[in-house]
Amino acid sequence: MTKGILIQNATIVNENKIFKGDILIENEIITKISSKIKPTKNIEVINAEGKYLIPGFIDDQVHFREPGLTHKANIATESRAAIAGGITTFIEMPNTVPQATTQDLLEDKFKIAAVDSYANYSFMFGGTNDNLEELLKTDPKKVAGIKLFLGSSTGNMLVDNEEILEKIFSSTKMIISVHCEDEGTIRKNTAIYKEKYGDDIPLKYHPLIRSEAACYLSSSKAIELAKKTGARLHIFHLSTEKETHLFRNDIPLEEKQITSEVCIHHLWFSDKDYEEKGTHIKWNPAVKTEKDRLGLWKALLDDRIDVLATDHAPHTLDEKNNNYLNAPSGGPLVQHAIIALLEKVKEGVIPIEKAVEKMSHNPAKLFQIEKRGFIKEGYFADIVLIDTNKPQTVSKDNILYKCGWSPFEGTTFSSTITHTFVNGNLIYNNGIFNDEIKGKRITFNR
Image (tube, rainbow, N blue to C red; front, top):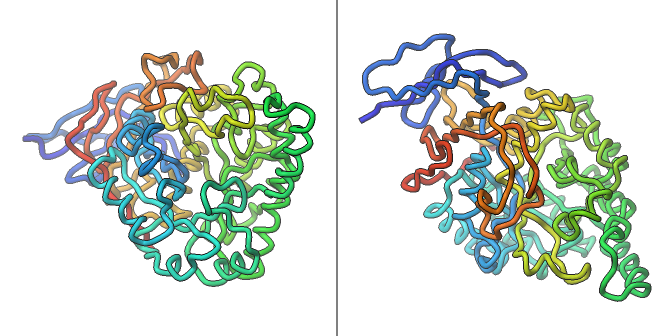
């Protein structure tokens, strides 16, 4: 029986440094990081010569569709795809069926994940116009945060009562994560295009319907309210260059009261891609112009944007292959996010150290996650090995999402994730999964 795992000769990327080294993992934890560690009896050795070793991606925004929407996805299938993509921890959103808007319903999701999730996990509590009392029972040490939809909600989760919104912002010290799009602006824009085209609005108008103005109006109002109330605000999936100027980069992340996130698809695609990709790149907020895409990259690199995420939100192909008004927004991304980002590393757009900071270190700092997000002695061994000289082409044959498709189909990436460790256990090894061991509920140092 092995007592531990020794990873040798890895190119380690951690805390803005790249160095060659060995890592010893024992009982879920990184116990030693050194230039040369000698293997002892019962230690399994993995030679990582020529490979990057990075801390696992902590994805702060996914929709795994369970309970209630499991024809699209479930926690088992999507966490498995996430592990193959190097995501070792995810935070899932409350807009399932039923919605996680009571403590009991939230705990039901934790119970499913304890049995089924390959990755480590937490869930957000969903705020509504009428559940403040329940919201305030949320345990800051055991739950990632509060999610509010200030636009583009499902069910009754649109929080559009300004008095209630101010009460929520004033009442909780937990991180409030928000989807910001102004519903009034979107409804007005939709009516204009519907009058002209009926239900079959050309998809190229999606970023004009869910417009820069709709995003900026909602984001700026949320920030104004956070400043007024002292709330800890995190704005999800920025999609416009204009919004990036609402955020600061002159203080450390740990001191920020207002933070932001950008998603892989808003960094990869632009409105030029609608013609080829159609509804497969229909997201809310919409993928916008090349100017917006470049502006988001600039803000990510200069630290106005703090974290990277996927907003993984699968739908079936039947659902997506509808006309504009009937095709749902969202797409699957967890399996391919890191390798897409590494393509931008290869192109010289972002240094790998900065990529690791945004997808691993900063989510851990921002959510105050205990002992994860870094390669450090005493931390959980949530780590990923990557071969940057092993190309792969995304195809139906290798997609692991339950929905069976990807917006990246046909794309050849230069890198392949070869090993993913979760809590020191090798869960994914060159296409083979360990189905016996599951992830853990993460905790928070608050």
